[in-house]
Image (cartoon, rainbow, N blue to C red; front, side):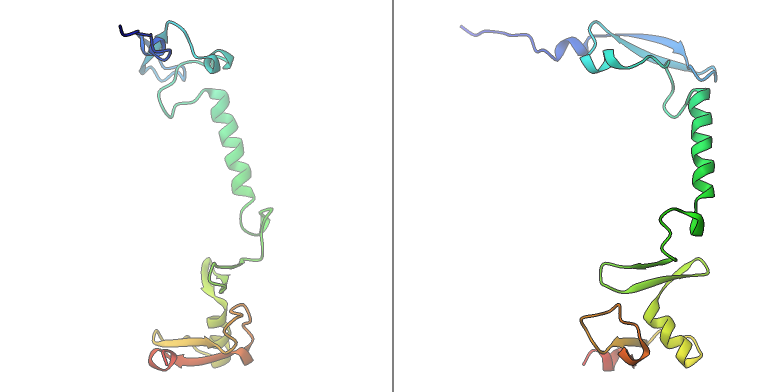
Length: 150
């Protein structure tokens, strides 16, 4: 004899579909599923209306605009976590923001010493291999790809 038990999740699957206008006021129609019994987490939620995905109430739209205005204001040097436009990558190289473009600091140091931009085949070698953040001119050596591979 086999015992057949009802799946506890089955009651959530039985839904009545109803079509109502979007609560944002755009006039579009939204399909709403009404369940015979709601999961407990649904009972705790405050009803805010039925929206098409991406549509928001007027209060939420204004709150989003205020957050975006604050976010735009706190960018670049005005941002709370501004570190001077400088960061170290996972390989240990220091990068600096120069006119909105990040460049490696060791290349900038050698370019300034030479008074020209580096060519694509020129490579900067750190003499002390363990510390790639040491970008003093005494620790840097200009070389090319073939010599650097040796």
